[in-house]
Length: 366
Image (tube, rainbow, N blue to C red; front, side):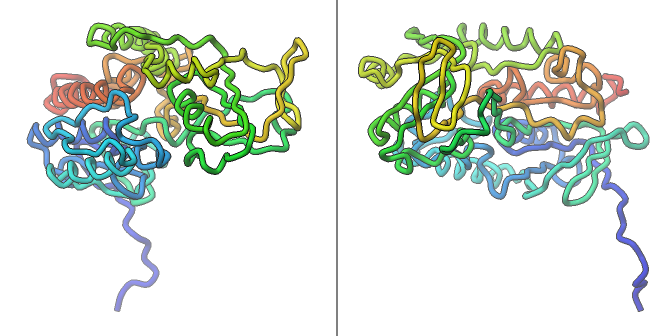
């Protein structure tokens, strides 16, 4: 007869490395862990809170087709070929990531939410999740930003009688037919939303905190290195990272040129207050709208790391390459300078190289 009064075994499973997140950065790291000879489930585990493969791409709006995606770099070891440009990027990249996981037998566990990472026993990290606990010698955090949309706060925001939504909730332009829409944000998502909405909406308006910078020159390797260096300087100093895109400017494509010429990308400075019917500026100018669409970006999903006290007084996490300065067991990939797809690939390789040194005793743990 079984022991009905017994409690479930909560002993954490020992493992060398836990990878949190199975987007571009997490899969790149898992690939390089496999190349070093580590075996999934025995030596490392990959945990992903999303319901299926695809990282943040699986949640993108259906009208963001693969042909509209800028700077999507293939994962290491397997090219993305033959994708139709008119298919939703969520489908194309979701299928690609799924095939990648199968091809390299990465054994991603999902959906698993990582709730907290703490100091454990014998120098290990204790990873507490919705599917159990692991005691790991090292952690690769690749949680990205999609789950933490940034909503700015402005006076009167709660009084607005229309609809407010964030890019994370945008599902395409058709539902805004005949409505007056205000798009807030000067990044790539904001311009894409405006160009999509213009044929459907009764009117569109665009506001940004800073004048947008449109770049006509090609974004080559040298420009990419310069942009990454600017972001890397911030994280080395322990400041909150800015995205790589924020320092590269917006590509001046033919579609963007046409939208500027037609007035769709006619930018207004940031308003001062939100009213029940719209927004107003200090000089008395006002615009009445039915919808405010906040294309205001995302912040890094790192709250589960709070027990480790990694934050620098500057507000960010000070980094040495991909390694956190405060704890050599913890690596952040897809964070700050590695937030682009090509940066995530490189960061995954660099993190695994550093962790191999840690596991072999060349680096000292905490």
